[in-house]
Image (tube, one colour):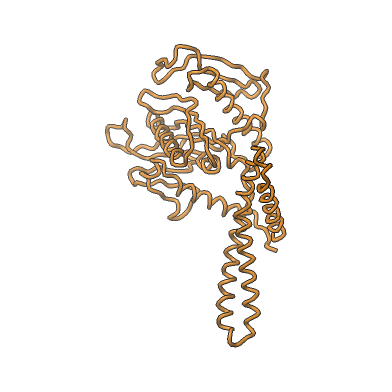
Length: 358
């Protein structure tokens, strides 16, 4: 472990030297890559250096223990230094966990109404609003690519693109079945009903990561339509792309331009095929789309939105740490819950892959 940290410190020094060269600012791609690497390495090196300082303090304190006049002070310093070393050691283990290579990528977000009929669709609309507000809080951009609405404004299904720094690193924890318990707007008797919606989250694949043979595509155009079948556009600007080898179908009708709709549909198709390829390569750890959304029923839920009890419960967390204020969450304040999920994920990975501290 310490040898690895020494190598990381040396690499940071090399990166900083390269960034100090004026010539690097003429190469935008290289500058971006070096700046990103510096950002990733700096907290590790700072923590490592703090650990070495605590180690030196402990060593000096141990040497002073033999002096009767300094023994009490030395013991106090030694206790504090050892506590710091233990804390910093745990922090270094966390910082050295393998990073998800997709963490900085944009996201394709899909929401589908599950059980509950119209109430399930209205809940799906609430989730879309929640993620839209969360994106605004994070400084991200959420753009609707394709949506299928009900007469009452519910969402049967919707696809959206979320663009912004770290979108995947946080939204990946939203994949799964979301359950709601409340009195529906459509319920006249005041009876509490349980409904569900599913959320799928995929990292956006760059063209260089996954190529598609144009001969494998069937591209159809049709007129955009909104709720109730009313035409939004009298021209055939909407696009439907079918990937013939896999049968994957993507539609986009949000833009008035056929070219823009085709471009966005290709982004989503590429991301879906890229995700499927990742599943094949690493089925044990890949968050497959099927496992993300489950069946859309109430089983296999990751989270419950209980309106009568004014709480949201994330079932992947435990104890008091799993409940959150429903008003805050439904209005896009997801950071506390997602932070807890990130810490939980780190703790699980540390437990699964304990590395010897040498």
